[in-house]
Length: 355
Ligand code: GTP
Ligand code: MG
Image (cartoon, rainbow, N blue to C red; front, side):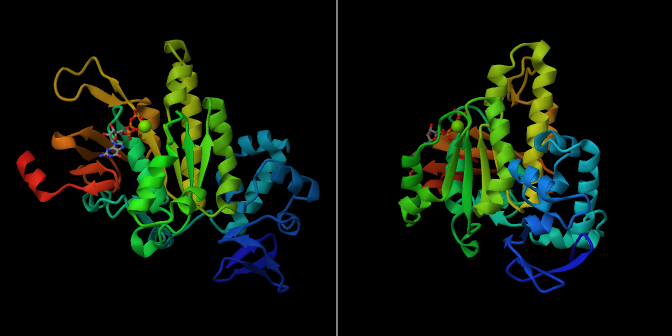
């Protein structure tokens, strides 16, 4: 049962919401879309405020709940105190203030898993790339981060029984390395219509870190409206590293990066989708033994990402993926390979030779 303002609302199986008077609020797959009538049922919201929220692309109750009030106020131009009241009303309406552990368990049962194309990589990830979570792919240039993202963008479109999410994809490309021909090739390998596959991937080319922040903000409107089931940011940190050079800018950089990462994290929860980001490595001069590289982005990156996967090159053209930080996955490693079909398992023979 959902409550909006004083009205008792009932969600139907297809995600529409029925008000007590029998009228139906339009909804996008379970998200309560704020039509004029709907928003104004929230305490403190009249048509003028509703329209300001819409102009700022805050169009769902979920978006109001997960966005910090200060940010809502800045984006909409609505006074901070009024925003606080609206947020409180939105929280009440969703009944999300306190949930029992049982309810959380149920929410996690709705978690979806997206296949990577490789059985062993899926096993490493506990079944696949999780929704309601942010997965970070870390590794040096040429290791295959972008290739994995391409593969995921194609598989996400498959039905769930085939390891997909039955939806469309947003691919935020910050480095201009998105290659449609490669998607075409991977889709053909999976016997999908390559043109249809390309149609279902929305490319967002971010030209600098501010642009990246702006585009990320748009996702709260864009995702529910366009049936987006996967969001990729490749790479998350490239612009930040090249724009904020020197120690004196480090604090500002980390603050901006942190706010952006948390936006993405909120997106995963609001719309039950996986966000996959890529990250580079940087040399760690203090490291004398083992791998001298460490993930870029410091503690901010480490804390925000749910699962951190470190990739490196193995023998015979293979790649090794290792979980380096995750609340639910053991720190195992597996081997996979990049082929013209995308991401695949390594034959047993190679595994044996390599030990
Ligand atoms: P940066 O973005 O530079 O940090 O690297 P990345 O980790 O994103 O690397 P990317 O995913 O671009 O991987 C490139 C590597 O994938 C190439 O060096 C190839 O080894 C491999 N690769 C790309 N396309 C193909 C292909 O069609 N077939 C095969 N076998 N390998 C491919
Ligand atoms: Mg890349």
